Every structure is written in C-alpha cells, then in structure tokens.
Image 1: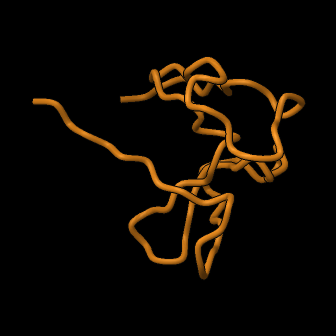
Image 2 (image 1 turned 120 degrees about the vertical axis):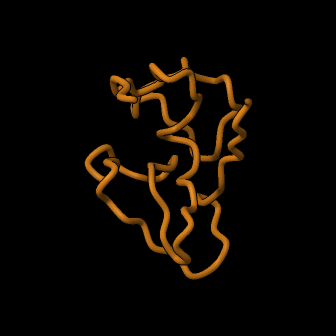
Length: 84
C-alpha cells in the first residue's frame, strides 16, 4: 500500500519539547506526529527513523538513519497494533 507523504504541521511551528499527539493534523495514513515529535526506534538496535523536534527538515527522510547509544529526549517508539 502506498500513501502520499503529508507533513503534519511544519518546522516553523516546532516546539522545543515534544508535543501532544493531536497538536498537528494527521498524515494521509491517519498517523499523527510522524515528523517533528520524536524519532522512532526501529527493530535494529541503535537506529531510529523519522524526525524529532530537534531535527532540521533536511534530516527527515526515510533513508536517513539516526543513531543513538542511550535514551535521549528526541527518541521514542510507536506502538502498532493490527486489528483482524
């Protein structure tokens, strides 16, 4: 399935900390805060994807790996559930 990329909110509205989930409009897939809140950890240790509140727009693309070694304010995870 392919979705159009829609940035919810823009970087001129960024906060200096994370924002509540529904602070910006959802993207085309209905997900909130995929860009601009926290970067999400992936299943490979030490790597995260997405953009956090501290990233520049040029750093936010799917091919970009963000690395981490310990918990940080810009890093989080997204709970995903499949409803059958």
